[in-house]
Image 1 (cartoon, one colour):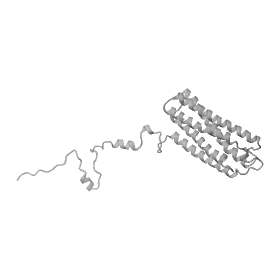
Image 2 (spheres, rainbow, N blue to C red):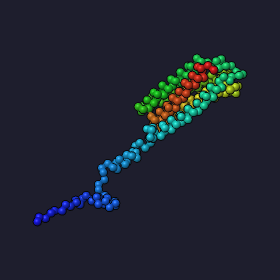
Image 3 (spheres, helix red, strand yellow):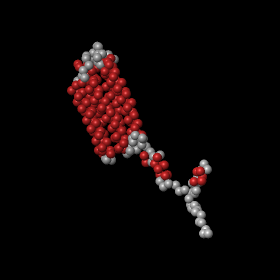
Image 4 (cartoon, rainbow, N blue to C red):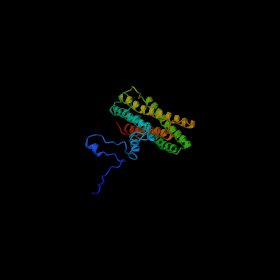
Length: 239
């Protein structure tokens, strides 16, 4: 009779069938790892070049600025609500319609809104790495903001001479608190702008220069938007 050949299992392939049937762990030491497995594992944990980004796609610094602006919305929301409650309580002083200088406030409001345009130009120049135009537009933005603050100080002085002070009545307290807080925010923005100009000229901007200019721009645009709301509710809508 002819010999019957017995099939054999190649030595390079471990026999895992019997091990599975017996409920034991198969010997996989001889198996080669799947190509790209380590790469996929590394990608799941994120690359090093995006280590400063958050899950929102924003950097940590920019996300912090947005969170700060969100808290500022709560602050101004409370101040505006308080003014709307007390704007009719003007006993002992002229009424708001007798005090407000709408043409002056309209011009100063236009100046502040134009500063948003110059801030956009500054951010655009920073993204092009054009330091000269960046500092120029930042300086123009600060000057426009200073013009607005100067007009507000003049307005406050006129109100005081007309008999409306911070402690005259509830209307005066709520009005000066709301508009005064906004003026302080504009002043802080001016200081930030001029400090940024000095840092750019000395080459001491930490991190991404364009991002730093953009974050200051976010704050400035926020101040402008808040003033649009204040100007509409305080000066244009009668009490």
